[in-house]
Amino acid sequence: KGAFLGIGQEIKKIGLQGKAFILISKTAEKVTRSLWEKSLNNEKIDFAIYLFGGECSDKEIQKVTQEAHSAKANYFIAIGGGKT
Image 1 (cartoon, rainbow, N blue to C red):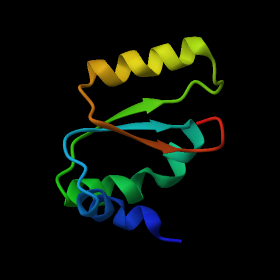
Image 2: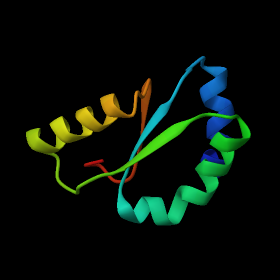
Image 3: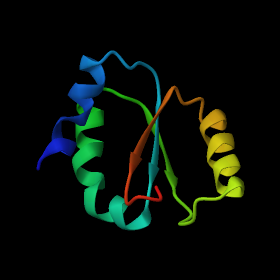
Image 4: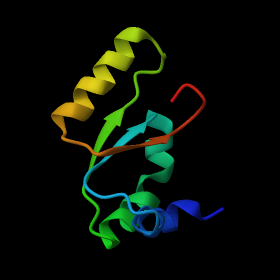
């Protein structure tokens, strides 16, 4: 409980640098965004958001990969259910 409030600090602690690519389900985005967004902003961590399409498939993997490259992301954060 409360892990999203410290996600920015944890990212800094483990040494990740650059832009985060957040792969998130629509429901999780609505419920959690205000928590992790505040934490990332407090630590000045740049991020891009991609709303997960709902099904894990080769097509979706290619789409996510392309979006992450386009965003010039350095690492992923996945938030949501098992498929995410």
